[in-house]
Length: 314
Image (tube, rainbow, N blue to C red; front, side, top):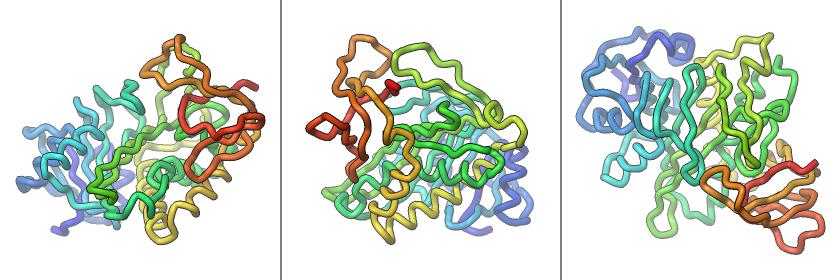
C-alpha cells in the first residue's frame, strides 16, 4: 500500500472522486496509531469501518468522514499543537457536521450535499515571504475550481475579504489559520465551504449576504460533490505551488482580476461575532483598489481600510 492514501468511512459518496485517484479498489484497513490520532482529530469515529485507497498527488492523505461533531479546522490545529503531524499536504472533509465556524467564530451549519473541506500545508517560510498569500490562496482555488464548469454562464467573483459570489449570491466562504515559530509560518490550515447542493437558511441581518447553491444557480448542469472536490483539491495544490515559487504578488494580481468589489459603492462596519446592529460604521465610499495587504482603497477616504465587514451600498 502506498504511503499516500484516502481514508473514509463513506466510500460510496466518493465514488466519482476516487476514480481520479487511480483504479485501485477500496481496501479495508487498520490505521496506524499516528494516523488514528489524525482520524479522530477530524471527527472520525474509532469504531467505524475505514477503507482506504491511493490519493491523487500531491496529496499525502485525504480523510473523509460521514459526520464530524467537531470543527475540522479546530481539530487539526489542536492535533498540531499537541505534537501530532499528519503528512502534508493533507486534506479532510465532512459530509455533515456540527460546531463548524467561520471567521471570528461565527457559526455555520455543514449541510448534507455541500463541500466542507479543510487543507493543511506546511510551508516553513517566513511571513514576509508569504505575505497574505495564504489568505488569498483558498479563495482563488474556489474561483479556479468553479471556473472549470464553463456551463455556469457567469463568472465567480470575490467579495472582500474571502467570500465567493456567483450571480451576486454567496456560494463559498473560507477561513485561514496559521501556526508560526518565530517569524516562520510552519503550518497553514485552510477551511473551505462550498454550497454545492443546499442553500443555507441564514438569519436576516445587516451583514447577511444572500446565499445560493450551485444546484440552485446552475440547474441545467450537474455539479456533483465528488467533481467539486476533485477540482478544488487540484486548484489548491496549484495555487500553493504558485505561492511558494512566485510569491504572493502573482496571487494578488489574480485576486484583483476576480474581485467583485472594485468600482462598487460599499460600507465597512466594525467586526462582530454575529449580526448585531450596534456595530459602528468605519468607512464608506467607492472601492478604487485592493492593496497587497488586502486593505481597501476607497475614493474620498484618506487611509486604506484594513478590517471590517463589507456590505454593498449601490
